[in-house]
Amino acid sequence: MKQYLLISNTTGYKINNDILDYISTKFKDIVFQKKNFRELSPKKAYELELQNKNIDLELQNFTVNLLSRNNIDCNFIKVTKDRKKKLLLADMDSTIIREESLDELARQIGKEKEVVRITNEAMNGQIDFKKALLERVAILKDQPAEILENLKKGISINDGAIELIKTMKHNNSITVLVSGGFTFLTEYLKTLLGFDYTHANSLEISHNNLNKMCLTGRVLEPILDKQAKAWYLDQYVTKNKLNYEDTICVGDGANDIEMIKKAGFGVSYNGRIGLEKEANIHFKNTNLLGLLYAQGYSDKQMIS
Image (tube, rainbow, N blue to C red; front, top):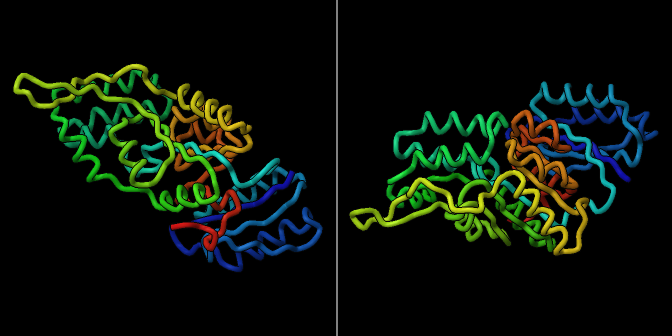
């Protein structure tokens, strides 16, 4: 087993030589000599190989706290098999895209406040995901199907998503978008970003009395929830004869916890508290390129 200290911040040039030298000196007794950080991205991402040494918890906490005060992410990454993963499962809302898709649909019809409240409760694990999903979709009853197309035009792809998918596919990894959101958007993102597979829920749409296509306020069964995300992870691992150490999963909310717990690298991306507790990699100041840095990729190895 090897262990790496990864420090990163992609929102600004936060990492300087003083920080690198200070931390390297702190870890000198662990690696028996002062080792230099490997640069993954100038002033944005660096790693220090710690090999298989046990890191004192007090030193870990000191390093994490020091860097967090400077808005720098700090992750101790343990590698027991291949560091570059063969399978990626990614959440959609607030992960691959910046928005929560249901909240944005509700904003179009002036129902944002009540839908956002339910979304927050669901993402924090305060209410059952399926119940929250059905309540929010019911609010969209009788709305024209055009709001789905409008949403596609308004979403923002999170920084690093394009490079993440392209780089992993270039290195023969399988990429899967798995979401408690909806197929109209996941299929769009599959085409836009190049995911190999997508899985999501389907909104029911039918003609109204004026023969216009409208949302019925219902979701077609079966409903994809947090258990389904873990189930899809199991299926891809089995089908491709992988093990869980070969996988990296990323999400932000309570419905991602089950797949995050199983993954070799379980990544919390600006995650809620419940998810943060279960993830072994955390990014708050690093965009989705952090998933590549965690696997040891440098900027020069990334495909854009």
